[in-house]
Image (tube, rainbow, N blue to C red; front, side, top):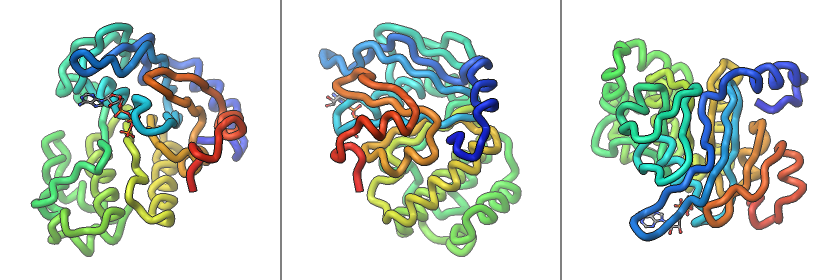
Length: 248
Ligand SMILES: Nc1ncnc2c1ncn2[C@@H]1O[C@H](COP(=O)(O)OP(=O)(O)OP(=O)(O)O)[C@@H](O)[C@H]1O
């Protein structure tokens, strides 16, 4: 969370603890296409790192590396200080990495309840899971028997977030949470993320339009052509970004 409310000590303290997620000199690509050329990123416990940059910069690829969906061909991926290069996506998920991919990640032909039921594979009881989800997003309770694919983009994103949180992740990866959503819904989604971070969650969020995520970020990193070209506090980065990257 941003330190505006006066917790610089807490941030400094978090930075002294082992990062929940760390990329050091990470290289990765698709066959002959090298997409990441030595990416360094650190997510401290209870903080939000915003990964910014235009289309094709490598944000989604970075997310795929963090979830184990794409292997590294150089550098190191560390979770809670442990090198996890080469672990499968399933093993990485078990270590507490949970992602909401670009374009949501709900099962459109399943109802809200059925989508939540999928998360019971992690051992949580469906009733408890539903109670938490409907408490956080009452609209999901009203839509519990509706097919996820027939809901609005915002409602689908709420469902995706609820399902992700059911796994009690150590670090949550959000890829373009705002995509296709009305500004008011985006604000609401990021407010929810900020509340979760205040409760101790760590988040890495990729966003093409910086303005929607900078208010809740502790650190921002600008990515271009598979490289982090600038890192700083949200204020520092905002000051250096062109309006093109800031977005509406
Ligand atoms: N499946 C793929 N096969 C081949 N090249 C890919 C694949 N996915 C991404 N790339 C390439 O890797 C580079 C980084 O793409 P990536 O999707 O990570 O960027 P991004 O910053 O997330 O952009 P966007 O927001 O548009 O998804 C781009 O040059 C892209 O064309």
